[in-house]
Length: 163
Image (cartoon, rainbow, N blue to C red; front, side, top):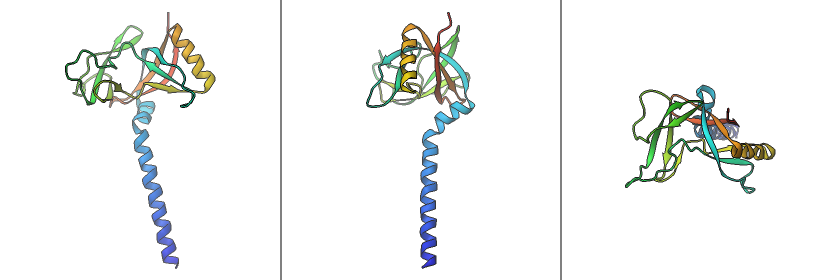
């Protein structure tokens, strides 16, 4: 009986470790960007109001990044890259590519053929903070984003644009 109980505990512990590992894999790109990424400032604009069913978050639009694929006869699908280059106080995105850039910061994005997901499309915050951020976006703001060497990105905060 003790042997059976011991193997059951071992299986439960193994299952817990596997699930913990899967959670780690799911958050690894965002965590890597936050811990090891270079801090960049991107021009940002509001895209969508707070959705009461999803909680307090702000959906962000980046006018200087090619986050929508328009004008392409055949849209790119899968993993694509957006090279970044400084443009004064903020960084701008270059043309989409299917090849990982060899130098400089870039965003690693996934696309379904029309819209890109780079991990910086929304920012979750407390209700009051989300409202403040949305008001700030209307008057002019930048997103402070951390980007690691593999192109993984995470929004750190939104702050007022410098005059």
